Image (cartoon, rainbow, N blue to C red; front, side, top):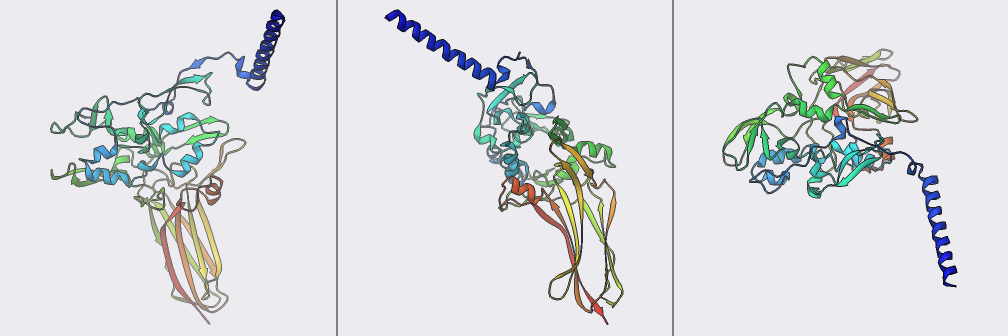
Length: 405
């Protein structure tokens, strides 16, 4: 009786084991797949290795740096760098199944900010990273996104463009390390990772192909020279602004972003009045005069809208002309660029409006240029909500026009 019971239990056990194997093979074909761990090879696959806190500092947080570098810290807090991790659009993208592990490496570049260390890829598949727990993971540092230590801490030293033996922490002078090459390490990631996934940030390549290469760099425009105290109470010194002015579109409606205008605008003259039957003609010219890269640049979802419209005295639109500057992409079933009319450095483009007058009266011509982070459709798809700013106005004019009998 006991023997039969043991045999029965053995049969049940073997049956369960067989079922488990069948389940694994059927639902997880890779169970029988020969698995090889391939090393990381692409620069964007790597985070900055865990950094130890330099002697004399409490930790790597920007808030700790701000205890002495008060004004620098205040500037950084207004930057989009400070919100690169909490950015609602990025978080929405990160939650998608199509989001691979390496996307965080530009938004929280320090290994200390990442919960896992990626050691390689199973059979080279970006969606099957080999991970291990990071013993130095700092959740609060993660929230600071692109923080002071991202650029200024390496191998136990605070990296600066100028040496300072008076500092309470070890300082290493390395202006070459703090050059535009550090900016481009994130702002020039361009690769098709899978048929439906492309990372296309080509600002660095655009700058190298433009008229400012060798004359100006990222720092010249996005970290302009300014005088203020490096350390409170020690007098003003020449340094670089750490608010990193750029698009000017804030990440949240509760903060104000630092804008850097790359465009210049010019207009044709508008007559105060014209006779019935005559044409009202208007031209708005946009020139990429100040940017060393194309406009817009970076995220391919960015674009400009140019709206020129005529309103009657009741405020109704009687004629309207709309234009768009930006890329158009198809993301499925294959990621590919459909069109691209971004403005090259130095390029001027004219946008025209013409209306044959039909009725006498008072009219108002309005011209506006808005800069957009992404479309309303994309924002709705990602459930970003009404408190996520999608655009800002960079040019707006209006003119009264009388049509006489």
